[in-house]
Length: 419
Image 1 (cartoon, rainbow, N blue to C red):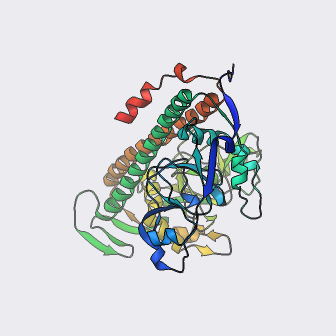
Image 2 (image 1 turned 45 degrees about the vertical axis):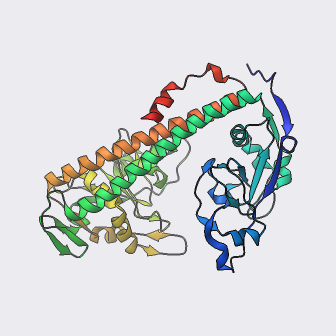
Image 3 (image 1 turned 180 degrees about the vertical axis):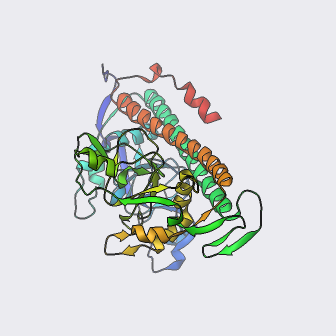
C-alpha cells in the first residue's frame, strides 16, 4: 500500500531555479578547443557527465550566452531526440541552449530529483510542442509536479537507484570490452590463423598458407529465398524476419505467424545449422547473417536467404562468425546493388562471394574461441537486461512509496560492484 503521508508535492519552480546555456559562434575558431567542457543535449545520458565531445575557450564563454555551471548541476534536455533526458555534471561545464540547468534549494537532493524526472518523463514528453523536432521549455520544466519525501529519505532512495545504475553501467563496460576483444581476435585470427604460419596474398588479402580461398557456392549445398506471405500476430507456424536476427543468432521475440499447408512448411522449413542471410534491407543492414540453432518448426520471410552448408567442408558456426566479422560485412556491402532506400545481394552474387576456408580442425578451434567470448558477452547482456528491469521496478515502487528503502537488501549488487 502506498504511504505518501510524509511526502510533499511541489511545482518544480517552487523548489528550484532554471536557466539554459548557449552556443559560441561557430565562425570564430578561437571560441572552441579550450579547457571548458561544453555539453550538448545529445550527450545527456541519464547518468553523470565527466567529459564532453567538445570544449570551448574562456573567450568563447564570455562572448556567448553560455554559462559555466558548477559540479553537481542537474541538467535536462529541452530539444531534439533526447528531450527529457537528464544528467548531473561531475565537473564544471558549460552547455548549449538546448540544455536546461536546474538548481535546487537545500531541501532537495539533486540525485533524487534526477530520478524523479526520469520517473515522470512520460508526463514531460506529453508536453512537447513544435514541428519536426518537438521540444519543451523552461516554463514547462518549472511547472512540473514533483513529489518528495524528507531529505534523508530522498538521499537513501537516490543511493539505491544509483547503485543499480552503476551495476547497469558496469555490465555495459563489460559488454563493450568483450565486444572489442572479439573484434580484435577476429581481425588477428582470420588473417593469421592459430599457429603462426606464413601468410599468402589472395584476392581478399593475407591468409595463412594452409587456408583456402574459395567462393561460397563451393560449400553451399542449398540456398533458397523465403516465403512471400504476410505474417500475422498469431497462427500455427512462426515466420522468421530480419528483426529476428540479433547478434548473429535467431531471437524468437516479436514473432509473426503464418498458416500454411505441410508441403509449403517442408519447402521453407529452417533446420538447425542453417544460416539466414539478410539479402534485402537498408545498406547498413544488408548482408547480416544469423545461425538457426533452436528447436521447433519455423519458416522464413522472402527477404532472407536460407543457406545450408556442406558440413564436411564448413562448420556452420565458423562461417556465421566469419560472415558477421566487420571486414567481411564491408566486403559484402561492396557487392550489394543499391536503390533509393534498399540494397540487395542476390543468391547468385552471394554464391560467388569469396571467403577463407581453414582446415576443419582449425575451424572448430576458432569456433570454440569465438563462442566462449560470445557466451560471455551474452551473459553480460542478460545481466544488463535484468538490471534494467530491476531499475524500472524500483524506480516505480520507490517513487510511489510502494516499498521503502529500509525494506531493501542490495548487498549482492554492492559486492558485484566491488569485484
